[in-house]
Length: 225
Length: 389
Image 1 (spheres, rainbow over the protein chains, first blue to last red):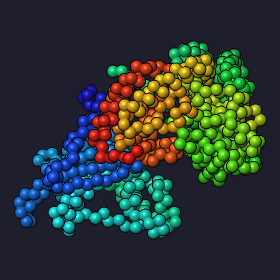
Image 2: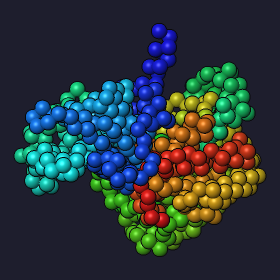
Image 3: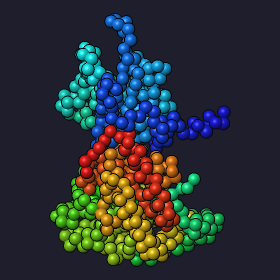
Image 4: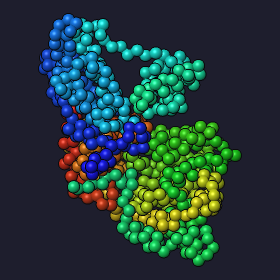
């Protein structure tokens, strides 16, 4: 019991904006990351790779995947046999990618279609929380994964399975999409005012405001609800 | 485990003598300095003693010292107070682009309220452009606020020269400097400096946190930002924090006495560390000027890796420093100071700041020089980034 109390001191609710302390799980994965890939890949070692981010914005993720196909035709399944990665980023970027790599490869490997359904908050839950303003880091690792998977689909000529990020323009004046609003919410925006501060959205096109407000509510519930 | 504190620009530990002076005061003094009775008078005596000590060090009159609750509050009072009181004179304020947020965000607020704000550029060493300053002072310029020494990169501004330029161009324009980082290392004589307002605080000079001073030259019009009982000549209401003020005065006295010797000692350590770290780790650059910087400030960008990750590894080894990385800021914006030097974002994201203090020894720095190269090598191994210098 005592031990639990001591442990919980490290964990901070992901809803707070005040300061941050990482959970002990985050620390474990940060100091001893799992599934790191430090060499250059050999020919055929992986089926695809994906990379997102830039050093300017502070995070870069690179992911390599090896897929195993079992069965044939309609009953065939694709299992993630290996997921290796490298990252330039902060502790939560490193820890969340490490956790993600564990999640998709543990217990013999996850089905590809299931792995694509992993949401940032699923990773966060396994990490026992991340500070709210750090959430965008873990979102990056599933984006890198999705890119790797898309490359895999391309490499295996499964073009119909490629996932295209559908973005819908909400504010016509500034060409701001629902993706931009999702990103703003992931960066900690909770209200219309917060989002407007970040994007100046709706300032020039007030008719967009009701839809923006709906989206803010939707994404806040999706990620923090 | 060893604990090596290299974050003195964030805050300093409390000097033992200061702690003692505060303890003695706390024991005896509890009256309100505004009360007329004996206990009130006792508090008033302590307050005046502290004020006198500080006035002597700044070489100003006692009534020119305003006690506040922090460096941030002093900066806010200076900027808001002077701009609001000077409305009949104009509506223009000039600040440097590398000011502390206590000045920068206050100026931003003034902008929202309708003031014109000019943010002065700095050169690659972090020094303001004096020609641009001169050019931009107009009849409308009420205040110029430029920090004495920068908190992130330690660059030292030519305050005397700036004061001269301002007064020559527009004698009515007032000059405020934030000297929080300069205190303890640089001359604080306001007559020599030629400033109209100057901020210092306790928490950077081995004094108590939650204490600040604003020097306001006699005759300078300033509106209060806190209203109430009319303490500090109506410029800053609120019952005086006598224990804090006594501690602050004691801290400044000690800092002033140690200033020269400590500056020489820390400059040597600083230069040693910079030389060694540049030699031991590839792809490292020094941010800010090599010479025109505070004796205790080291700020380097280590490329291809991210500052927060380095900071947490160093923390594991008992070494405490800070970073300019976006990941370590509330706003997720990388250091505005490093960016103002003309450095790209990836330099700010890989910036580490080590700030030395009275307790820092060469042995401490050697330990950092032993640990840091390994951390950097390990993090570079897992990084997919390889930036060209």
